[in-house]
Figure 1 (cartoon, one colour):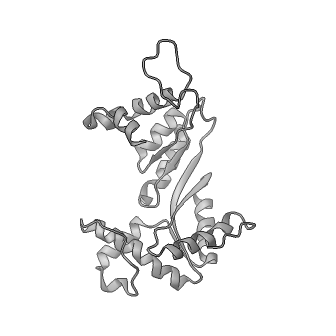
Figure 2 (cartoon, rainbow, N blue to C red):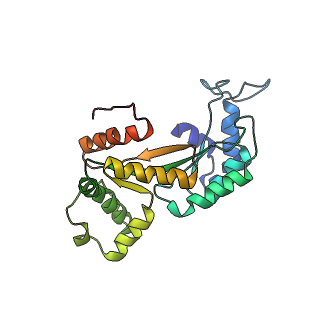
Figure 3 (cartoon, rainbow, N blue to C red):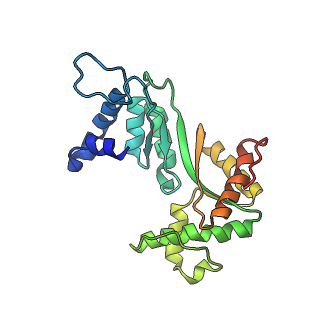
Length: 222
C-alpha cells in the first residue's frame, strides 16, 4: 500500500537508485521471519505474496529479468518500448525461487461496441484526454465527440495515435482480430485490459463484448 511504499522510499531523491533494493526488501517482509529480525510485517510475514514488476521502460524489464520476477509492461501508453522490453526480459531472465521461466503481461486499450463507428465515438474521450496531457492541462475524462478533428491539430492527433498504438477499437469482430494479432506478435502470457470510456454503461458493455474473445463460454450481461 502507499504507507509501505513511503516507508521503503525513505529518501525520495534516491528512490530510483534504491529501487532494486526496495523490491528485495519488500520480498523479505513476505518471507518467514528470521531470528533477530528487527522489523516484521503484520500481516505479511510468511505469506510469500507474489510480486510483479510493472514498467514502461527497458530498465524495468532488465530488473524483472535479473530478479526472476513476472513482468507487466504498460504498452497501453508506452507502445514504442514494448517489443524491446519483452526481448530484454526474455533474453536476460534468470530463474529464481519465485519463477522458473519468463512470464510476461502486456496492457492494451480495448473499446468495444456493437459497431466500429460507435466504438470510435467512445474512443474520442481517450484521445482528448491524451491531448489534454500533451497540452499540460490534465483533467477529468472528457465526454466523446462526433468530430475530434475540429478540436485537435493534426500533429496532436498523430502524437495521440502513436501513444495509443496498442488500442483495439471497434465491434467484437474487430476487437477480436486486433487482440489475436497482438498476442501472435508479442507472445505474451496474459493481457491486461484498460477501457477508458466516459459513459459507465458503455464501459460495461465494452467489457461484456470483450470477454468472449478469451472464453467463448463467458456471457456477461452488461
